[in-house]
Length: 145
Image (cartoon, rainbow, N blue to C red; front, side):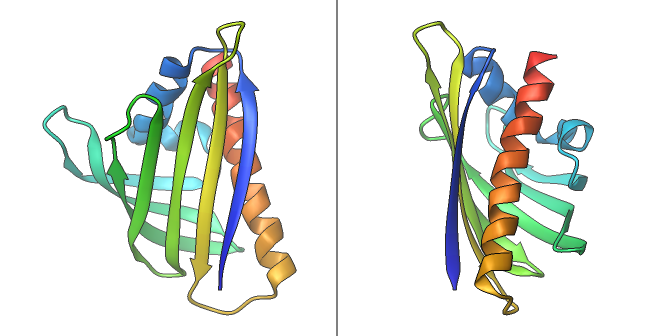
């Protein structure tokens, strides 16, 4: 069963700075605590990562997944779909970057998760909420530093 989690946060940085941070996947391990290893498998003509393999800590274990990134609405949106995964059969999501009246970034993070193994719904929803909240909190700390 798939579940969707959404989180939104204002970050004291420009939307462009936030977009740059989330597209700089090679540095995720420096600011995203659960990300342990990142391997860029392919890039587009602008040298942006289009297929990326991750090893991350999730659900009390190490998980592997590969994401395909879509830049068609850049820099307002970055979306991705999972193309491979050991624990997840779906890990699709997107970041939306809007500008507040003060010039800061209003960032939304939407994640759709489907696991290969059944776990209780409340555990899964708690984990998804933790993922989205932590991702935005860590992005905020990284770009506001």
